[in-house]
Length: 114
Length: 115
Image (cartoon, rainbow over all chains, first blue to last red; front, side):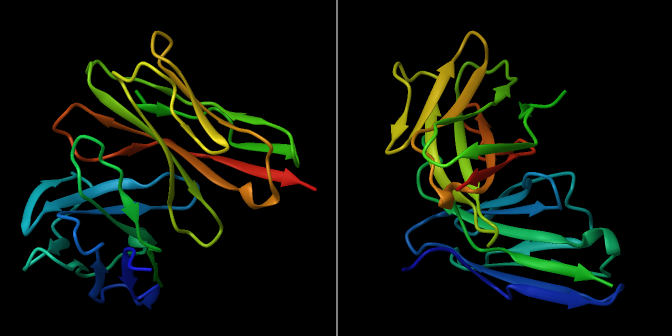
């Protein structure tokens, strides 16, 4: 099964540390999305890429957050100087078609900031 | 104002019964898409069904159907013959406009199927 994969699945860090997550989309998908999901809420959009271009960023994405997709394949999401409020599930999704926009999600990375 | 409203935080349904999960949405864009996703305890979001705003017929996918009432801005998910494995969080979501790629999710409904 070559679905969306994310690494690591779980990350525990101390406040103030930097963390980086990786997402590998479905190979033929040119769009890649990052969402954040906190307990009891639905996922919230953070940013998305079409190929290597970052086309939209949510206002939720503070200056401490940066995302890249350097070769239009995998993507990384880095959080600098983590805060306890960053604790959440970070979900990655990919899609192929704009009109339908069925997004396939990965298993997520659960971040806990102590 | 919330774009997607799911008014049922939790539901309990007997196995083999049909269940309807409510969803209302708010948009002024004539072109939009509506989705339902299932999130089991493992955390992965599983796509269930899609309805486009211009689709004439209600979408169906196996045991899932979407009761699309455009004038009421309602997109309820109907699960027929519920199974124990249907126990999960269910999210209604919307894509606005032909060029907007992001999906806006509701807060979800937790469905419990009772044996």
